[in-house]
Image 1 (cartoon, rainbow, N blue to C red):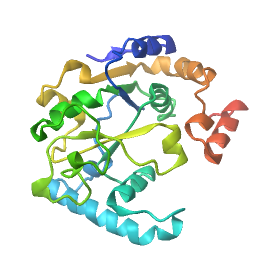
Image 2 (cartoon, rainbow, N blue to C red):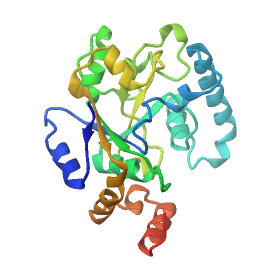
Image 3 (spheres, rainbow, N blue to C red):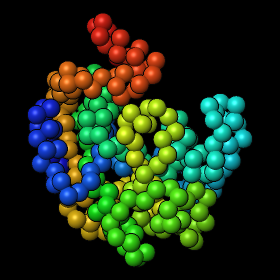
Length: 257
């Protein structure tokens, strides 16, 4: 059952109550109904894993050939391109998470700006606990791998379908922008299983505390966002560039962001 969050105090109390012996990551969703599925696996026509892996390979090649002039520095290898593509919302097998719970809460509260905004959600993941199940056949203990680590050889970009492992794996990625560093970005990369993480969580009988959903009722969103902004989690903190500063100015002077 999702846990109900109606105030910043509720949220902070929940975060404070998480066990210190576990690392926790967070993901904010503007609608509680959004599933934990990466954008590549949402393609409306390409539905098989083979089609989607070919799509990933085609996207990588297309983006590599056309993005050179826009790069601040030359990128090296498919992993680095994959994180770069994710930053600019090109579909990938990556799902964004953050180490900072208040960054996730900010995105949950601001992702839907319509007057008919629905219940929002913040997901809480124990990445090491999750990986202990996802990587158990490799004989590795609970840890969070980096893109160059051997545990991710069977999840790497352009991995042949026959070698791709089934379950999503929590991983650290390269910071390809100042925004990603400010947001303490982390990732889950998907494998052959194309269902949402919450479905895989149930199917694989993962520990109850490894994936938790917090729901924020629509009527509580405004007051909770006001509390979060007063606590200093503002646009220019989450988005440390001219766009974030402009958004903060718009809000500060009484306009609707």
